[in-house]
Image 1 (cartoon, chains in turn brown, cyan):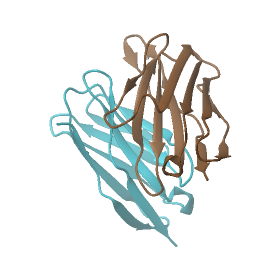
Image 2 (image 1 turned 90 degrees about the horizontal axis):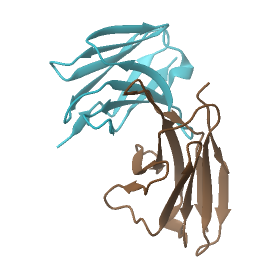
Image 3 (image 1 turned 180 degrees about the vertical axis):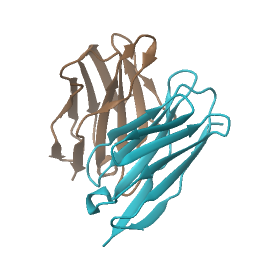
Image 4 (image 1 turned 90 degrees about the vertical axis):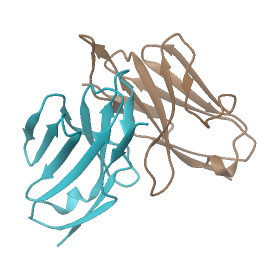
Length: 118
Length: 109
């Protein structure tokens, strides 16, 4: 159980285009979903936290107008990188966790999406 | 501020034992997690500690001392496939996960 999927697993796009990444919890309802970015040989960097039906909370330095997050249901969150540029090329990873008995269990990670902007 | 410290890199020999330490200073504590991340892949969950003591799971064990703000991950009978980064993360009082920078573990034959 506790599987999180991401689609696409990799994408190559031209500079200036927008890219949408989907994150789904397949066998559980996620109270909260997270979006991370990871550059080569660096640690995970949290971009934003989203709760179903409410606006995402962005970390400092992350442009909310550039990285649009929609969390329309308890099983789906999307990240749209608008007007992508080469510096946005990175490994984007989503994760989900659920509140059970007033305790959050571990975050379950999707397999990641590798974005390359030409 | 909130801070999690772990060594940047460690090297160990196949078949040996290695201990990866993690110290934390956070606003509140609701549990500590260890994740494994292979290069180019997403992290996978290894262990969770919320009470003091040792949690054992196969070749991997994790220890927590809340009074010292300290945890370690112990890996026994090291295998080449254990070469990866190991991430320590702490849930603060708001259940926000604070991540360490990760420890890159290199296993040599």
